[in-house]
Length: 370
Image (cartoon, rainbow, N blue to C red; front, side, top):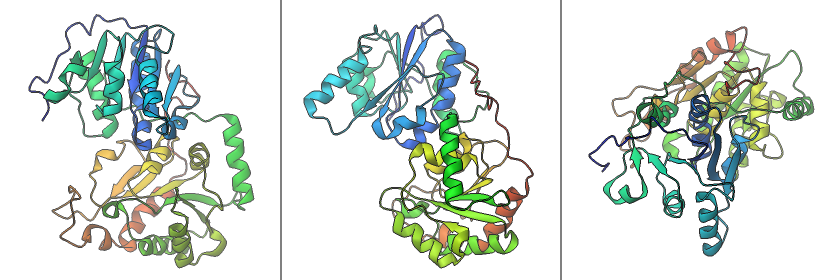
């Protein structure tokens, strides 16, 4: 249980940090959702250097971000001794002087090791349970319901930084955009085609709309919009699943399954060229939001707290009394997913496709307000 004292923020308002470390190890989508907090801090402390401690697999999310000075990428394959040395190196500032503030958005054991080995003045997080109290000097509660706002809530409640509904953001280089153009040309996507990215996979069955439903939705969309081309995204070990979806959809060249898995940056660059992203509640939806592409997410066990509250970002669910749930075994045979038919989802997808232009996010000219 969280500590009974929801606030411990004495002295934070007067703090003028020169170096700040933000800790968010995983998952990939959660690191995307950290970016509004990064930009809020940079606006509040424009002269401060902001570093991020994350896992190696998540580091590409932060590439080219003008608000981030350095990314500490944890390699989980290191030996125990080398890992402890790494924690110490990160926690003490990597030879660039100690951090004035470390902000922990997760309270994971690996972050606690870093805090324990750090000499930072301020170690700030959300209210910790009693057994984590020694690791933190200050804390404040988050706020929601949107997940990125919940993270940023400790900045609002502890540091007085207002939440302005900033979207998550991934900053693409011109070289990455050119790479996306080359891939689309390779796949035969022309000027008259409307690109839709589709994420039909998830490691949790309670969050994964059936493959047959995705195939059915693809057919229905294609009947109404012959200009649509589907790009099926996949992660490690998921290629056969998306091949099954494409085969069942029976759209031939209008469904694209890349022979090789796209990197995170390639996926983001291609999604930026898409008119819509369809899929489950997983990291590709956050990538799409972060490059300004509309999304339609099928919800099973999850709540709408993961949906960015902005134009063009929507989710759909059956609305059963048991939704959302704790995913501890479904007594209803996953009705929330199986009974949500492609015909129910189709009108929402077509409406999002009807928009003449993609929503433009503040800062699309590369200015993050830093």
